[in-house]
Image 1 (cartoon, rainbow, N blue to C red):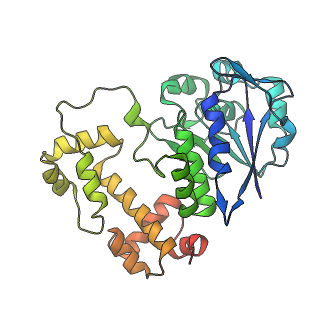
Image 2: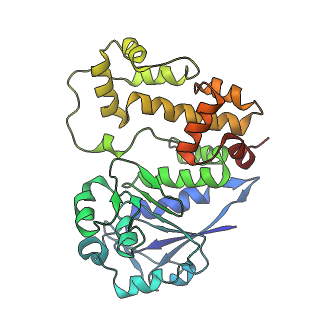
Length: 316
């Protein structure tokens, strides 16, 4: 069973701390759990949780030693968050993590990974409100505060708070396929995949006017196999292309074209998992046109070819 260790670093954000056991703990196949999730501390002392209470944990840092995945929830531990260094006790705990472990951070947990040098030269994200501080402390990290999460292979980082749910569901999807991830999402009463990035949540003025692109987006999701382009979507929304594109990005954090490609790739992945259709038909039914186009977009999105993806995730 895949072992997940969640390292609670005081003062840990309580919301973030509960995301991994909730998501991974509900991932099951044929009624059997797929992950063994353990919450551990830097030492044996109770851990201070944000907003005024302490938690007594069953595990200390020894739980890190045999972990396959280590998750670091949001924390404002002074060293990484203010000075760019790891305090000795935290450095000692992280030294127990096996070099083969997958490392994951939620929100300001990225400060801990950065202080450990794990993110140097890598693309990463954290809560948008802390991006200026992060850049000052860790200039060698390629920070992108406009996304919900960054998957950089063996190191993954998420934006603030609820983006941790998006990232953990993404990990379940990568490990065990969309069906199990979607089931977990339903149990948690959250969408299996959220559109756009955290740029849509950054405080900024919205375009003037009462129009929304939501109805057009809903319609487009039902017609992905049809030839859709931005002018056609703008006409359906009753807007000029310029106004439509501006409002679309403000509402989703993506351009209309990027949004269409993203959802067509998701549709193609679902069809590759759930049908035995030829790749040409999957490409046509998802709106990507040809098998070559499907290969190009799937490889750009997740780095694999259609048939390789099907061999890994097909339930048939």
